[in-house]
Length: 168
Image (cartoon, rainbow, N blue to C red; front, side, top):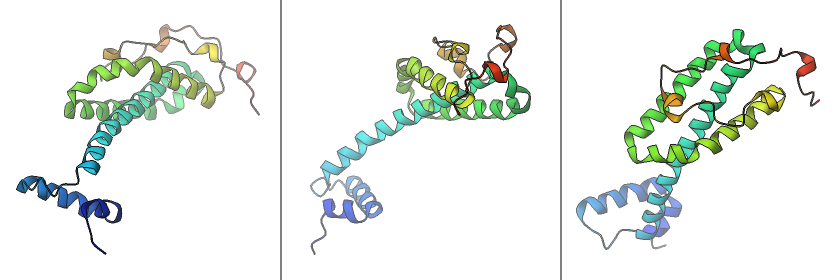
């Protein structure tokens, strides 16, 4: 069997990657598998965007937990705060590597917030009206390592078993 670069891409991705890097470094542009290389480059951008969207959604989810899930706050707040810091650090790392993604954060903020809100409604089984439909803060505040929502200023109804949605 004649091993060509496109065949190598399908049979041994790591070897294809190393060979492609060597070909580019040596200026052997004729041998480069351009079709698969271009696909990989496009996927890199998609992966960064997907990662940023996932991290922002998880960050918002934990900010919502900390703010609105009163019955679990005392027991879980240290872990939630750790996760909030972790997601912020990962987002900062991504933005440090790709500063042009900062504008993408603004584009996806509302969608990520609604996704986080729905996840919280499902997880907590609290009444949906407890969670605001609008994003709870600006993107700058959300990413600020020193900012947390002021849950003491939020007037929530007492969360009891009766106020929970019973999905079972």
